[in-house]
Length: 321
Image 1: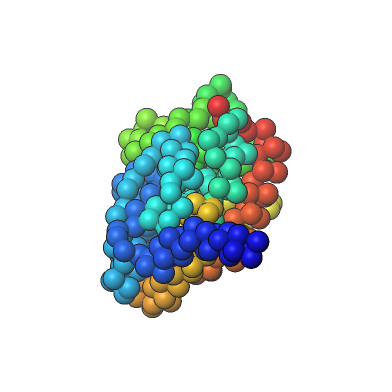
Image 2: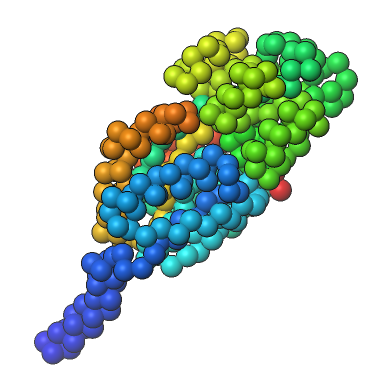
């Protein structure tokens, strides 16, 4: 009988050995970083900036893959279904917390992911074409009610931070608009400048040059406090929409069953890079406040954001197929 027990124990240890060995050898090949939106957008710029710095400091080899579509669901499904070995991760934006409540059906659950590093957050900017003739949110709301679809809102895509920031504003102010989803923020902002649409919500850093040269009108920042790179533009709450706040944030996450040792390795490497003054300054210059929180804090933040957005989405009666 003792021999049988010994055999069972040896067999169990043998089964665990490959996983333990893989974790100890990690990483032994390039790590695929899936980004939820197209190249050139804020998620792509931040993701490449941060992973490049991590790679320079640690020698880790990252391969960035843009996988846009369905508000980030294609990228999230890819990572949720990937082998839990740490070689496929997602550089996530708020859609990872929002989409399970926003869409009628998604092919993953929040519990399919394990948070690794909360990189930082940034407010967005509510923008209008100057020829629209509105200089405040009150004026925008009034203009939107003059005729059906009087205002065309171009977002970065269904389920994006841009889209949700507009939807929450609509629910809180009575703003009316025709939603025009784009495949990325660059295209949405280009069409507002060109007059094909009237308003959009986009990252501050990408908006400022157009605001300052008069090609866009900045109506308000979406954060609770003014960004240090745009101190002259009030927040939407300061502009009269009490308790309004909607920021975008960036998080590295992996499939839920990735070993804790692998998560720890990645978290440490990202934390070391995000502590560097040069990277923090570069992030601040594009409107991002560095947070640099590890797996525990990032996981708590992810769950709290999911709960917050679930309520907002329910209250605003937003639902996507």
